Image (cartoon, rainbow, N blue to C red; front, side, top):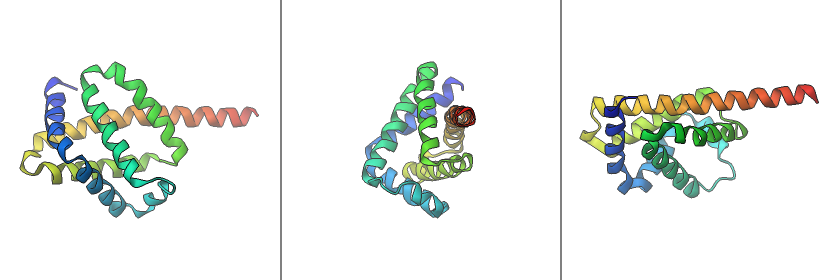
Length: 148
């Protein structure tokens, strides 16, 4: 990931932060519109708290782009936790679609093709780390069950 991609993501995120509540609502509305089957993954979750967690997580990830080696362990832990929530690989694609759509709505004309590509690249990197950790966690669980 080059410096320009990191810069575009960080600069555009600064424009989203003031509308974080609206952006989070847009995101979840779009996510459940794209795949209503995802709604049950949040059964006991107060969506208000979930929206805050989403925006906090995105902020941490965006701010950590220049320190990816420090960010990776947090992303790995997040990926492992998502296994327990029932998240599957295909869900990451839907989340990415909802995220890019939300950014487009929130940024308007500032969501240029270059900004979109920067976010898509960043999301792909983040999810690859999360998915790798999720797979490793699932494999460890399978091995432990087989050994029991």
